[in-house]
Image 1 (cartoon, one colour):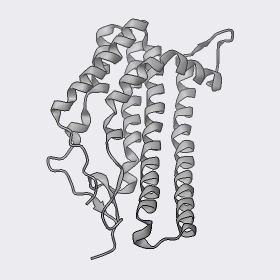
Image 2 (image 1 turned 180 degrees about the vertical axis):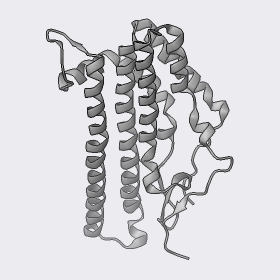
Image 3 (image 1 turned 90 degrees about the vertical axis):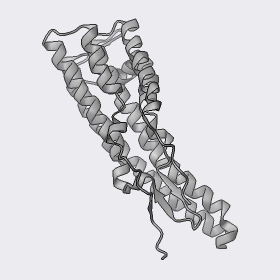
Length: 245
């Protein structure tokens, strides 16, 4: 039987409320304006999203490698076959990680060039930069990392689930009845939501609506547990990849 996944309901949303209060407290304590809030969302979009991708690739790879070692006597695998299998897992995981590093990272790179045109980041000793580079990203991380704990707390559901589990017959199963491709839609879906909120902050800034109440409403949209609304009434059974009857 595949490993059962933790079931979430509305009683667990109190942690989302904690994340909301924590994120709002950080913004208030630091005295952030629209530009600061926008860059903090950009940073959380990249860091949390990329961490989700690493988890979705790394967890199945480690699970498969460990299962191969644990069940080596049952399947009669010798050391050479085991090493070859591990190398194939490593190659596949490395390819996926490289692909999403370029794709996901490239998306945020392009978006950062757009953001810096309207919300420049002052660098110590260098003034304002016309384009975002490594020094810009390091400065963004230095300034806005306090927002990351609340962002990770709000997106904890992605790390509480096992993207791939193995049954007794070693057949892989995708959690929640999803396809492999739909699993990687999760970080991108969060990115879309975050960047929609960035545009709301953008509008509030140029419309002269910069005040704490507006920030609180937009943050409430960010931290609201939308996953509980999208969740079907009855959980789907995991999709098994077994070819047996």
